[in-house]
Length: 186
Ligand SMILES: Cc1cc2nc3c(=O)[nH]c(=O)nc-3n(C[C@H](O)[C@H](O)[C@H](O)COP(=O)(O)O)c2cc1C
Image 1 (cartoon, rainbow, N blue to C red):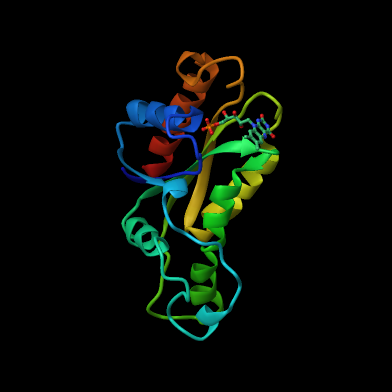
Image 2 (image 1 turned 45 degrees about the vertical axis):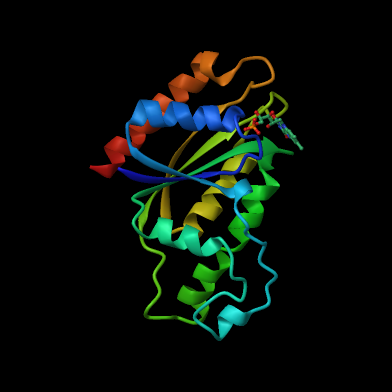
């Protein structure tokens, strides 16, 4: 399955990257990682240029994201949890999805479609968050803006105590997510 993974962690070899590697290994999917923190993507300023033009006023690496998204069958949002939510870097990137919403719903552009695909979430958390429900809720909302149907979440919730590669619960949750994705793709 052609998979686009948005990595919202600023840590180059951190827990989220390990979780992504686990997902790659367990799924065997054709994965492309889009490292949000290494890209030049400014947050949406709600300037509303896109309400009247078929483009965004901000010209930056978001254009690369739209190209990558176009043929993705699955989009995976991968992020550390900060204050119970996906990282601010991921949320800042996500603000730019407003262009898709405006093109489809406000400008009603017949030449624009965000497309349809599956969506899933991967979270790394340092133990403080016992219930990732608020982060999942936010992730689902972002996936909707990417034209993705939410399938499920996998997480490593105790990275303060257990490295991802030794975390059996995290491994099981990644395996379960892969099974869910495979069965809902049929
Ligand atoms: C600013 C900040 C806020 C954090 N907030 C939470 C939190 O609310 N809950 C939690 O369980 N861990 C929290 N953490 C810990 C990270 O989620 C955890 O270390 C995670 O595994 C880091 O992933 P990474 O290595 O991919 O960046 C926070 C870390 C930082 C830097």
